[in-house]
Length: 435
Image 1 (cartoon, rainbow, N blue to C red):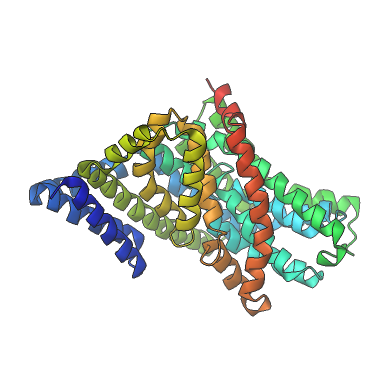
Image 2 (cartoon, rainbow, N blue to C red; image 1 turned 90 degrees about the vertical axis):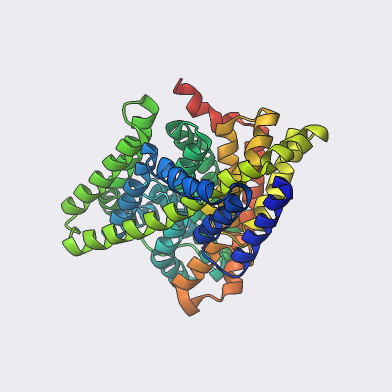
């Protein structure tokens, strides 16, 4: 039996394991072990399980992941993100759909303190949705903006998917983190524009806020939100200037979040313990998926499937536009069923040789991939952010209303993706300044 045939059988095995709800990290690792044993025998399998796992986990750049997760956990559990939302609400409530816009902008700010889209969607659901519902907002709009703006967490630095992509593709972590900044802000602006247009056309969707804030109250709320802007400027400025690595930037953010919670008098040892436990659990889950993906990638290389895919691309003269459209369909369909990080790491070994043969910039492609996996979080029927938002609000909003409210933001995402594809400089401008 040829290596390619064995590879296809094992890909089928992987799909079966995922379909029966085996955790994706376990499914990847088990499939890789079976495949390598089938191709090369027991010795090669054991060698790969040991060497590939150690080489990946020992990669220094990955130490940024627990630092960024800890930073986000402390910011949330200490209430720093709540201060940011209250400040945005006070300053933006006069706009059409002001509370939804405040939620969107607060999510962008929280994205600088959390690399997790799912964590951000859960946090903002508990914080912002009740406020919007009390103000008479449409239930679909209130939950849709939270589910959609949660995806900003994977674009605006820090970003865990970008770190994993960089390590997997042997690209610059700093360049990728900065590459997500303008696309993240562009997405935020697109969401804001969508909210304002819908609220202007149909004011019943988002009644104007009756809350009145004095100038002094606005400034006091803004001052209390100081830690997150400081974290943003510290991380982006440090990476841009090259004075810190991604890991050092993560450590800086975690320390600032802890110090800020002390100054805000919201620090407690219980809060820190919860944050650390959450960090350990999340990091372990991410690393399990990543190690499984590394093993699966090694198996695919041995099976020669990526090489055959590259030959097919050259034979049929696939151009960049066709590649983009096929990748779009690929991620949108699989994104309905798979965890975003697992989806990215499973597909990169197959897409990387195509990308290389077409001469695609790996930084730009990284932004495209991360955008696609985040859109997958919003894609019904199984988009993870939809379920997280629905679970956080409970019976207050039916699941179908959450889905319908999010579909409007998928239209905005389509516009953003067209712009990112048509103008790669949006993603590459800031990284180019680092050189």
